[in-house]
Amino acid sequence: MAGDHLVKHPWVKGGRLEPVSTPGDLERAFRRVGRFKGVRLARAALPRIRVGADSPTETLVRLMLVDEGLPEPELQVHATALDADPYPADLGFTEAKIALQYDGEHHRTPEQQLIDARRDAWFECHGWTVIRITVEDLRDDLRDVIRQVRACLGDLVG
Image 1 (cartoon, rainbow, N blue to C red):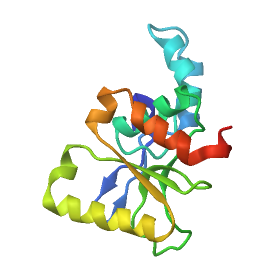
Image 2: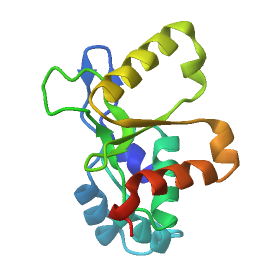
Image 3: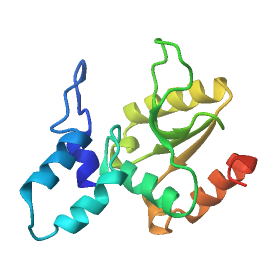
Image 4: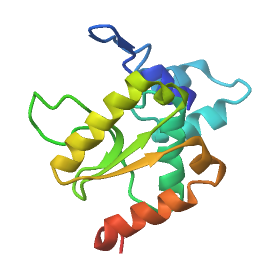
């Protein structure tokens, strides 16, 4: 999760900033530094680092899906290729049109719920299935989410 955090493009008002690092920079740094406590674990994590996760939970969900044998979801997925597409999904499977949204604590405000409803409607209008993920799903090891994703992917995972 720390690796994804280092390579993410953080949100600020008006857009995204440059990341602290890149996957390539991290790989070169680990090659240069030699031995230190945890270096093996850090090097082993490098192939699992992805640009695009906006939270540790998005990384956790991605890794849990992959560890269950599902294809790796894309990060910050758009329903259309249009530049006007205003609402990215946290994760998704473009070919199968599945959008995964993690609804953390800040999604409980009325303002955010309105944004979320518009986002979900946008995806559904374009033929996508929206699966919302909550902390309760995480406590249950994403069992229902994994079942839903597997069912929606159908032959793509068979």
